[in-house]
Structures are given as structure tokens and as C-alpha cells.
Length: 505
Image 1 (cartoon, rainbow, N blue to C red):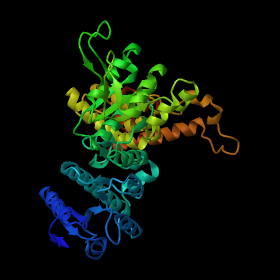
Image 2: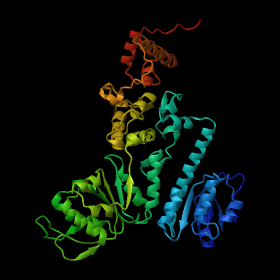
Image 3: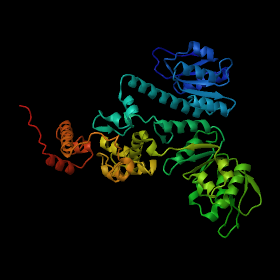
Image 4: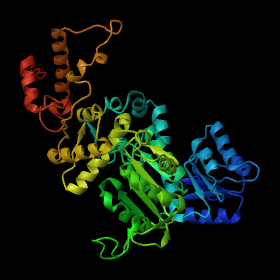
């Protein structure tokens, strides 16, 4: 074993387990050059015997180790409840092994020879996530707010926080570490997307991204390319819904001069432009049925002809496709070829709509505020508890894209003050016409009379006024806390007959 660990050294400790001395030495040199503390081991047995688990922040381990293999080591750590991020190294590029490793909790699976910059980026990201996760567990052990957030949801975790829920300079709790490239989140759906990207990106498998409009399918395509072995080559984006029907062949495959009236010069197509890299076919369900066979051919045979040419060309392209349509229904209606569907659907990634992952809304809001401040040059606004509740109670039919637009618009109007959102709320009186919203006889409990409702409203308003020192307007004012306009609040105070108690003598 080689190591450089000092008792006073606060640098993150990374352990490398590989039976090849040259690999251990090169990784040790690379990681130390990035300011990390490194210890190397030639076998899993040596690591288990000598590693300092209390200081460990990340583990780089070869899959094909003699004796205890890398996967066996992963299982031993899981059984021992040692929750350290693991990055697997292999010279085999074995996808089934990668599937097993990632499902068991591996952070990444890198094929030798790996890119030094990408390995460092992956290691730093793993260490950052692990550090935050460890801090979270410590807070939870002490009864902190994050345990409350897990049990009660994003809003209830903030019940006893100050009036300003987020400074919007780094998300809830002051961190935006739950970010994978441009994909932001913290819930289970986000973690599943990240795991799938990390698993399939290093391969050349065709990926089909499925999800509603505005869920971020293009971001996923970008991350698939960025984490692939093709990242040094082009990523070409094609919106299939925007191409006129008569120009599909020319757009995809290019054309020769004189092939049609407006073809005044030779033109390369998108497949040729993406040669060696990744081609993203957005809204692939919009491709006309009669042209789908031509796309199928180039996917199967990697060959095509430009319009107006007889010369057959080849394209080494990794295809990522996306659609908001249900392609199985499209096949049943004979609008999408079954053979093309199965050619595209090698590795499907389904993106959950925002209404099913509302735990990500605080982080996304923080991100979009930062974008708005940077792009619009506006003052940094504040998000109050009432504002967050409004965001969480909305179903977001336009998904993340709609949230971004709402935040941008609200940031302009806020002028550095509190963000206000005029959004319909789930469960409004209009929804009460549905029979499902009315409780059955067995579900009906106690009700409140009008007088009791007024009393509770009066008590709640009095608590808020006392909390704010009877300040109505502005920062930390009662109107901002309650999410109403100051004029509305003043009318309510007068209607309920509330008076400020005299100061004690």
C-alpha cells in the first residue's frame, strides 16, 4: 500500500484499488495533481485490511481484480453499510457488469483508457455529493430540518425557518450540489435519470428519451453526449417537427447541386455533420411515415446517399431520439413503423413530469432565479414560504420550461422584492364539482362553522402580526408572509377588528 494521509490533512481522501502498478501510479499522480489525498492498494483484500474508511471520500476500483473482484468488494461494503461513492474501472467495457454495478449503487463506470479530465470531473462530483449526503445524515441524526423535509415534503421542512425561505443564491440549505450538468433535482426521479445517463453514456447504444413537452429531454441528450466517448466530436441537434416534409431527406442526408430547383450548391446533411459524434433527433414521432424507412436504413446499415447522388456514404453516428408522443399508440394507428421503434428503443429513458417530482421545485426555482438575474440584469428577488407553497400547489402542465418562464416573469415584476405568482391552485372550488373530491360518509369528519372559521382566521392573522411587529408592507412584512397584497391585508385586519396591543409600561 502507498499513502500520504496525515492526521491534519483535510483534503478528500481517494482510494485506488487496481492490480496493475502502472494504473495505480498514473491515477495517484493525476488525483494528487488535482489537490486530492490518495492511497493505493493492489487488491481488495489489502484495501479491506488497511483502508481508513472514516476518512474515505471516494473509491476507484478495477472490476477484474484477482481474488475478491470489484463487484464483490462493492457488495461487502454495502453489507457493512459503508456508503462511499464507487467509480469502477475496466478494460472490458462490459455493459452487463456496468448494469449490475450501477444498480448496486456505483457512481460511474469508466472504460480504460479513460479521459483524465473526465475522470477528475467524475471524482470531484462524486466527492461533492458524498460530502453533502454525509452532512445530511449527520443533520438527520440530530433531528435537523432535512429529515423533516424527507417525511413531510419540500414545504413542510421550512415551517420553522425564517420568513424568507431561500436566499436564492444556492438553493435550499445553501447548496445546488444536486446538479448533473444542466439537469437539476434531488428526488428519486432525478437520481434515476442520472444513474441511467451514467450507465448508458459510455456505450454506443441508441437512446430513446420519452417525456412530456418541457421536461428537459434535450438536456438529457446533451449529458449523454458529454459523458460519452464521442464528446470530442460534434453533437448535432435536429428538431424533426420543424422540418418541411419535402426537405426531410435533404436535411438528414444532404443533397447534390442541381438535385432540385433551389439546390444551388452541394450540401451536407445532419448525419454527415454528426459523423463520429452524436445526432439528437428531437420530436422523432413527427417524421412522416413514408420517410421513416430511409431513417431506418441509415440506423441499420450506417449508410445513405445524398439527394441527387448515387454514391453511397457512411456515417458513424450515435443516435439519441426524443418524443412526447406515445409511440406504441402511434404504431397501433399505423403512423410509426414498428421496426423503427424497436431500432430506436434500445435504451429508453423516461422523464417524469414536474408534477410527479415536486421535491425538485425549490432547487429548480433557485437555478432559474440565478439565470434571470444573470440574463435580465434584474435585482435578486426573494422566495417566501407563501410563494413556495404557490409553486408546490400548481400542477405545471408545461413542466420545467413553464416554471422557468414563470420565474423569469416574476423576477422582473419583483424588482428585488418578494416573488409573487398568479397561478391556479390544485383543489380550487372549480375542482369540487368532481365527485371524487367529495368525501364519503365514512370519510366525513368534524366541520367548522362560519364563526369558528372567522375565529381561526383572526387567531392566525394575529400571530403573524405579532411575529412581524405589526409591520404590514415590505420585507418580512405580514402581507409578504401570508402571500397577499398589503391593501387586502389591511382590509382584512379592519374587517376582523384586530387592534395592536398597547406596549407594556
